[in-house]
Each structure stands twice: as structure tokens, then as C-alpha cells.
Image (cartoon, rainbow, N blue to C red):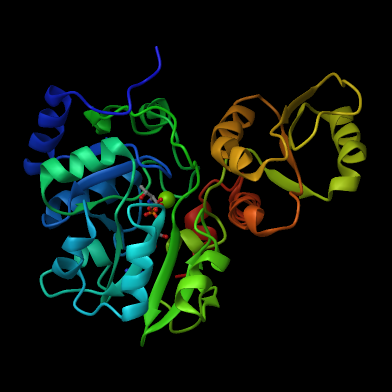
Length: 336
Ligand code: TXA
Ligand code: MG
């Protein structure tokens, strides 16, 4: 049976009670599943890090029910940030702003900024409205690994460590939110997502892209994130069939492509994810999980097409290639 998009009153009550008791609740958003804790309870937020296996100094996003709560969490909201919030919230955009007094170091990783987002998923909205305060939540995966886009991914990965998992089915976007920071009022894109750089420029005018020295730390921006355990290589589109054939001679190989294979090959698990970016992005993490479990020595990914729609996908694939197969990806490649 397909999962419902809304929670029952009983499920909601149990989730809110857990949050109030300092426990963790996994919940769906339109991007990926989050692992939530009461953002005003530092001990509960620290528990997120334990369960994820994430280093404690990493900041997490605070999820809010509505824009009206912004000033409880951010002490300074530049006009351009407010315009972005008005345009894209609720939705897959995170704003990094100077934190308000009282926002805990557990949430911000000790930085002077806080990341904020109003998700649009109906179940996330229900939870946030019922909870009436901020929910700190990173993606509900083990640190450095592929984000969960279905409740069963959360169960698989975090198991009994999380008692309450709200099941809202498949996340409609499937890739993490776009992150924009404001340093001295200037907008900077820290992580590409479904809200594109072009859409942001239309609202704020100038947008710098990528982290610089002065940018806040974004651990999800280090190379080794979003990675499967099997080594993953991105292959230029024109070389795909030759490389697959060569690899398959010595060991089973998994392939993520945007077209079918030219010929059927034994020892090849081939997923054709298609050429529509929104669909490709929606399915990406699920496909990587499937291929990771296919018992292959390598995953070969056909380089994706050019274009704005593919920027976030390209970014996640590049990180997956950098981090895949490393036993302890974070400690080896973590830059901050
Ligand atoms: O779509 C999403 O953003 C999902 C859903 C659950 O909302 N969340 C998510 O959280 O992807 P997480 O923790 O996996 O990635 C959030 C990123 C991290 O790379 C973190 O470093 C960055 O946001 N971040 C959080 N607070 C920050 C801050 N104050 N300054 C800079 N980066 C920050
Ligand atoms: Mg994450």
C-alpha cells in the first residue's frame, strides 16, 4: 500500500511527544528524510550526531513551520534573504543567517550563523505546526552516506536507534535543499539544489557560487559526501559502453545511465534513469542504493547532460565519486 502524505492524529501525537521528551523523530520532507530533534534542546540535538555518527561540530538545519518564525532564530535578515524566503518558502531552500541569541551551539556547530528552512512536505508541515517550534534535522542517513528518500531507507540505515519514523512515502524531489548563505548581506550559493542559481539570481541579483575562505563550514560540501560503499566512477557519455564491457570482463559491474545499453551483457546491472533531470534527481539516491547492493565491484555512472536542471545532480554525483568506497570517507576527505 502506498504511504499516506499526511500523518494520523495518533502518529502526530506520538512524534510530538517524542520530540518534547528529547527523542529523535525521522520525518519526510520534499527533498529527503530528516532526522529531527527539538532545536531548543541541546542534549536532543547532540543525540542526532551520535545516531548519525557525525562529528559534533557540524551544524544542522533548523526546520520551521512558517516564515513568521524566522526572527526567533535569525537576528539579522537582509532584505534579499527575506525576498528569497517569501519567494521559495515553503520549499527546498535553506538560508544561512546570523543566529539569534539563544540558538544553541549544538545546532550551529559553534558558528555565529544558523541554517533555516521551511519545508513544504505536508507531513513535515503537520509535524512542525503541531510542535510549534524549530526542529533541527540533518538528512536521516549515516554520516557521509546517501540521503534517504523513503522511510525504509531510514529504517535500513539507522534501525532501532530511531523509534519514530513518519512514513510519507517517496520524497518528491529526492535531492537535498539548495543552501544560500548571507555574509555581510551578500548571497552565496553553498549547495545546489532544486531551486536553481538562476532562480535565485532573479530574486537577489548577484549570487556568488561555491564556498570561499570566509564561508561558513558546510560539511555536506566536502568531497566525500553522498557516497555509496561501492567505488563509483563517472564516465564520459561516449565512452560508457566500451568501459562497461572492459570492466565486466573481470568482475560484475553496476551502471547508472540515462539511456538503455546498446547490447545486453552478462555481469552488468544496468539502470536506465532516463534523461529527464527532475525524474533522474528524484530517483538518484534510490538507484545508488540499489546498485550498491548489486554485489558489483564498481559502479560506473554515465556523465549527465549539461544544463541548469542537472547542476545539483552533477554535484551529488561528483561527491559520490569522491567518497565512494572509502571505509572512513569523512575522516579522510573531510576538509573542515
Ligand atoms: O534538504 C535538506 O536540506 C535536508 C532536509 C532534511 O531538510 N537536510 C539536509 O541536512 O540535507 P544535512 O545536515 O544533511 O545538510 C545540511 C547542510 C550541511 O552540509 C551543513 O553543514 C549545512 O547544511 N549547514 C547547516 N548549518 C549551517 C551553517 N550555520 N552554516 C553553513 N552551513 C550550514
Ligand atoms: Mg546530509
